[in-house]
Image (cartoon, rainbow, N blue to C red; front, side, top):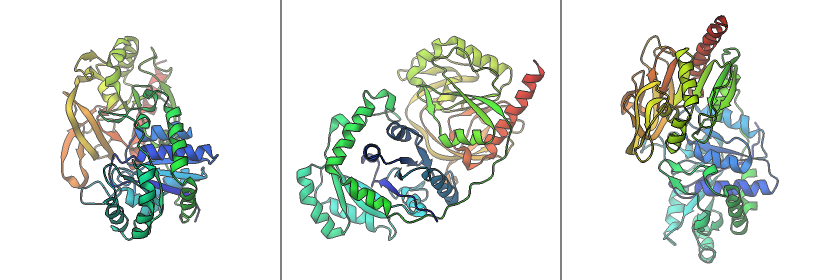
Length: 459
């Protein structure tokens, strides 16, 4: 049993201010000299980027659809051990799971298995006394709700002082403060969620101002007391991994390609991969002597003209593909590998040409949510029947989405073919979580190892 001081920031619904308040609290803890780690529940990429902007180190995802309870607990404990305090940001509404009528994989379930005290963020815009049954219902919906305190968001200090005593008297839950509405400090959104930290002018300074506001209107000391009272956790040992041996992977990472699970990258490294990062936007050549290429997701549609103009990089990728280098690509990376890709205004640009067809913008989210993928073809990069879990979240579609894998929604409610595959290529819209089946990255690295031998034999 080990003690890991920790709290979770949750809310009754999305849009309540979880990310903004989580970042403000992270900054406040940092300002006090507390070595703080951050975690995000669910498959989100962008919220962890804001965490990282504050704490200066990697924020981790905790996801009970991708991993078993023991594996989530092991991942949390492994990383929380490095910090004085851990802050876990919830996903959607606190009790919302993979199914509308289930708490499976919800923030509530993560709080349960990690025994984490929860600070509930309540959006108070347009409400006063009606907030009491909302808070009471959230706290009492489950006997083991773990809700240990409340922060009233978008509430004036004048109204807060009238409401605090009433809420505490009727519900018996600590009201830890309020956050007055400051529109100039709100993180803005776009078609797939929040703007990226690097796109926000003076992002770090804005978060510092926000944290100063929280120091005045929220009891940081009481939040720290709640975190310190978190129960000890029984730690779980990590699973042993197969080793592929040393291979060198080129990983696309820049303003257009920035959606990566850090745990995916570390899993590749733990299996023997050396990761070398490159920029399809700014570099003109791929790294030397590489054995495989990985393209993550991101917003290539915002940089379509620049990506298309970088013909030297596109030619380098085409040449490596002709040499049969193994390639993985997800969502934005998949779009980049098409013959053509549209930008947000439906202007088409030439891309790498490895995937036949056009990546085009639609008017709504396509195939949003969790999926389990199963390889359906022999003789491809992966063995037929191999499964791995992931999620989709995109407003783009393709005239050549592929049929190498079958994607199945949780509980088998819906399925569709996806992924363009052959013996060196596996690319498509789904974002995959490698730890859900380490055999997936292992088989990829072993194919990279074969390519490495072929490359050396041709020297």
